Image (cartoon, rainbow, N blue to C red; front, side, top):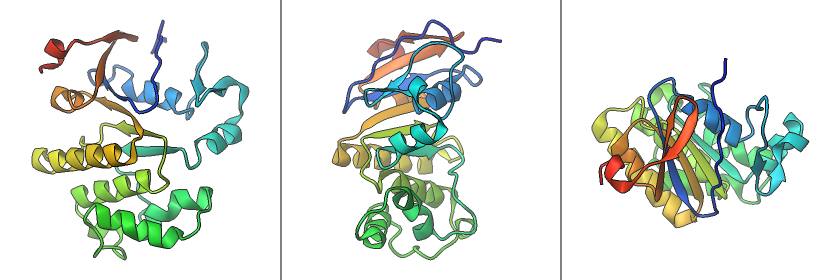
Length: 210
């Protein structure tokens, strides 16, 4: 079964790109391929100018370390670690001086400076996603991938999280690739693409609803 086909996509540094599509369209699969988490059966992919096909799994992980941040729909926090420990995880992969202070700083930026020692189960969904945002940005990454970041949140909480995502993204000057089925979220990005039947097509501002 072919999930994606005849795709051509180039994203420049500093750009924010939304990939829209219905559930099951292959958005998460595409994101995993772009990030080098998955390997395509055919075609060429490059990240930061390096061919992902030339790297093994460890090589792809090394390429991402400190340069790529992730925000997932289901937060992906480790349940036995505190908020601060979860945020510090990416810094363990790319050791940084003053890591603890940086983790505390980023949790403060997302409004959780008083919740450092709380486990995920002690946090609301919105708070867990804010921990995930702090974790994504703590390494000052060049690129952030976000996969349905508000999918498990109520509309009001989701809106606050998205405001924070774009605020942090603008501050850090990162490239943002966002997959979503939400047109209101997509139109916050500079460019929108529609994934349908395995193919990508650009969307005009009118089609996204601006």
